[in-house]
Structures are given as C-alpha cells and as structure tokens.
Amino acid sequence: MKNQIHSYLNRYASFSNEETNAFFSYLSPKTFLKKDFLLNEGDVCKHKFFILDGLVRLFNIDSKGHENIIHFGIEHWWTTNWESFITEKPSLVYIQALEDTTVLTLSKENLEKAYMNIPKLERVFRITTENMLIAIERKNEFYIKMSSKERYEFFVKELPSFVQRVPQYMIASYLDITPEYLSELRKKK
Amino acid sequence: MKNQIHSYLNRYASFSNEETNAFFSYLSPKTFLKKDFLLNEGDVCKHKFFILDGLVRLFNIDSKGHENIIHFGIEHWWTTNWESFITEKPSLVYIQALEDTTVLTLSKENLEKAYMNIPKLERVFRITTENMLIAIERKNEFYIKMSSKERYEFFVKELPSFVQRVPQYMIASYLDITPEYLSELRKKK
DNA sequence: CGTCTATTTGAATGTACTCAAAAGCGGTGG
DNA sequence: CCACCGCTTTTGAGTACATTCAAATAGACG
Image (tube, rainbow over all chains, first blue to last red; front, side):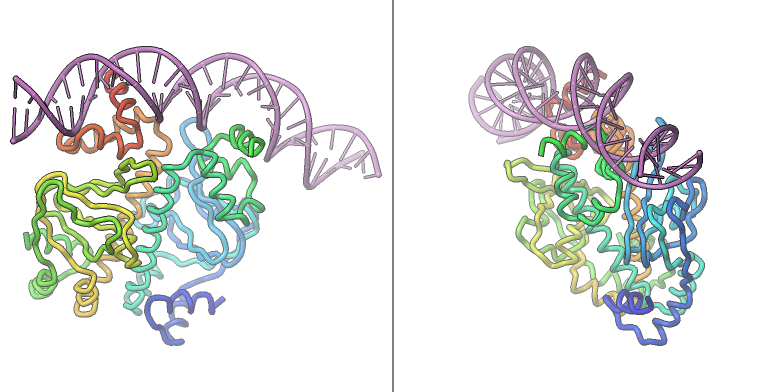
C-alpha cells in the first residue's frame, strides 16, 4: 500500500524513500462498512480519501427527495468533495460506501503540512488536478452529445466492472436516466 | 496590465515585484481580429491565453458538421485547450475571437521555465486549477438538473454581458439547445 | 438597396419522463 | 427448505420536452 503511494508521487516528480515515507506518515487508514458514510451532507469535508479497496458513491438529494449520483470511486482513486474540502463550507453531497471499503485518509491539515515540508508535492497535485480537469471536460463533451442509450453503452464498455458491482438504478442515476427508461433501453438492445 | 497579473499571482502566495516582473517577462501580448483563430483544430495548443480585452469561443465541429460551443472566454480569464496543452496532442477544438481580442500569451515552454525559476508558481496554478475544477463541477450539477428553459434563464441571469455580446445561436449551442427551440423559449417567457 | 446571416414560425416526430402496478430476486426466520 | 418481506427491475399507458426540417421574416452591413 506504500507502493501505491510511492508510484503515485513519482509519476510527476521524483521522491526519495524518505520523502515518500514522510508523505505516508500524514495518511491514516480507515475502514467503512457497506452503507457507512464517509461524508454527510452538512458536514465540512475535511479529508481526501485514497481508496485501497472497495467502492463508494458521491451523491446529493434534490428538492424532490431523489438521490443523484455524481461520481463513483473505486480502488486506487482519490475521492473527496472538492468543493467542500477546498472552500471549507458544508458539503451539499454525501459520500457513502457501497461495499466494505478501506481507505487512506488525508486531512486538509496534514495536506497543508505536507505542502510545507515537501514543496514538490505542489507540483504533483498541480498536475494531477490538471489531469482531473481534462478528464472531467472530456467526459462532459462525450456525455452531452450522447443520447441516453449511447451513454449507457459507453458506460458499459468503459467501466464494465461497475456494471457488475453497482445496482442498475444507481447506474441510471449516474447517467441521468430514470431507472424505468434504462430498463427499456436494455430490453431494446 | 501588469497589475492584473500581479494581483492574480498574489491571490494564493506572496510574490515580490521582482518575481512578478520575472513572470511577466514570460508573457507576450498579441492581438487577434474578430473571427481570427487563436487555435485551430489539428494544431497542438502551445499557449495559455490571458485575455486582456475581448471575447473568444472554444468549440468543436461534430460529425454532422455542427459547431458545438464548449466555453466562452472574456476579459481577465485564462483560456486554452487544456487537453491539448497538457498532453501535447493535436487539438480537437478551435478557439476563435468573437470580437477583436488582445491577450497575453504564455507558451508551455515559458511556463515550464517559470515553474523552475519561481517554484511558488506551482502553488498558484495548483490552487487555481482546483478552483476551476470546482467551478466546472458546480456548473455541471446545475446544468444537468435544469431544463432547457432553466438553463437559459440561469445563463441570462449569471452572464448578462454575454447575452449582449454573443449571437443567440451561439448561446443556444453553448446551452445545448437548438436555435429554433431557444427562440420558442424566449417567446413563451 | 440588396445580400448574407440570424431569428422566428409551424408541423411532424422522437426521446425520455411520470405514475402505477406487476414481476423478479435475495435474504431471513420459522 | 420453504414462505414471506423488502428491495430492484420490468412493463405499459399517457404525456412533456425538445428536435428536425422547411420556409418565412427580420436585421446587419457594405
């Protein structure tokens, strides 16, 4: 698990073992059971989570009481509510484990310390944030142009493991399709 | 114009006049006439542009020959094709001036030099990239939930200056509405 | 004033949603 | 091991939202 962190850091700058260890010391492992919340609506999101094992969803509940899934998170991904984490305002979303999930937590406090002690980290996080930006924009461009059917087919093709692990109505929510209509689409195909 | 840059840099770290000047020396002004392209599809995007005055659009052309506007850029905003700029792959999009536009260009080469000479810049760009990420996610969440009508009303309310300066069919494109339907919506209202 | 571009209008169509109800499926207790 | 309960998925009818295509009208600019 330290390996994963080491290779993550060394993608965009070179870190000695000491530096990796220093960074690692800011992280602490935590386990959530299925249905546990990593973050509740209304709370300030004080951590980034590096998922070692498991699956989470980030969602909100709208004025009609409907859950809207915004992201999934899976092994080897960082997940957090960026907006709340950065602005330190109460979260509008929930993060919930869909399976028993083990994470490394990185508190905002520790992250700031880490930036101070290992300035090279700024570069790593600058670059990985840029990459996320690209990924989000690319996803948007695809999704906006696609019909519901195409979105679903794309999802199945790109993320087959999610199709196995996530109930269909949650996939529908993520793709902004009603569960009824997704069911129809699957039949037609 | 150096003021704008100075205040931009000092939002997230403190820069001396010397450092600001050093950064400024990496920038070079350039003027584009209305309809000129800052970036062509197929070219690698080698610059970030800080818009001093004017208005640009970033768009692609889909398989049916339709233009799809992805972003607008306006005074005091940075604009670029992130994906091409970062990956150095040919751009899938165009950036075009909708008015006569003056920018400061920052080449990727110069930006890398600047990171080397003024490491604090990593922090500034890390933070501003995070802020962009938040802005994009927030926009998505809003837009996904909104009907065409709501999207248009939101746009008019949030960005009234664009409504003045951008032709209606381009606003339709940006909001993913056909120009015909946007026309209807405006009538109904 | 004429030409080119942008906007509006209208009819027909398609895509996706709502609501209600039925069917399927998995786990739990008897 | 079966029966039941709760949750997920499917089915179907009716409807709303938004698109396509074609054509008319309006506006901007030389």
